[in-house]
Length: 371
Image (cartoon, rainbow, N blue to C red):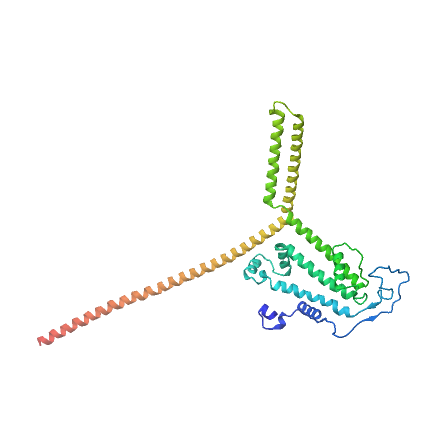
């Protein structure tokens, strides 16, 4: 895979220490599996606590002091780490994402210096379909933690006491931070699963609050409409106050007080909206955004200057080549001119000799005829 990705021939070039550690860790996680048909379960020699009173509860009354924290199963050391294979689900989500497989999207991302990794894919899912993503995540976490809790508590509590439904009920009330206390874990492993469930529930609750707050937030156009309506309400109350105080033939003090009170309320509402708009502008035009904008502008100017320098060097090279061509043309023209003049001289000399020979031939003919 590394050879095909980097287009190299020697595999030793692509092998680095980080990649070796990554491959080794993946092989270790995927190789963990319990031995089939082997019951790895034994009791630990432990002294039962002295001052423990077991309440007579219909579910917990059969859990005695000898069974409480007195057994350990190395089988769990092979069963629970198998959950680590779920990283393959995230890799599948990344490789089967439409944005990751679309060449156009990846080209646009590379132009904007955005890497299409798992973090970006999860952010995109939380932006496009947040409720669906959170619902699927909560259901998967609920099923996994229920199975882990039952695997931890199955050897301590009897199967009738901790059925899959009871385990799911315990995970649900712990996830929602309710905690009725009718079913409790008795092992360190089960308690650790309960703590993880509570932390995951708090995190998912925070995500739900963030999603709903973003959905309920007014858009920019809606804020402008609300601001216009509040300003219009102030104008309306001002007119009613002026009408009842000055234009009416008989002034009604009660109506004047009512409209004056509503006028002040409208002013206070408009003032609050303006304060919120000012806070939003301060957040949008923060120093971090200005610094980021300055950095982007500086990078763009540096890129343009580099391209301009390259263009100037290419123009100088073209100019030098044109001068060389001009010099060669001039030299060729100079060498052809003497050759043409010598050719004309030779042609004139040859014609003169030809005329002389023809005259001698005529004289000889005349002399021969006269003799």
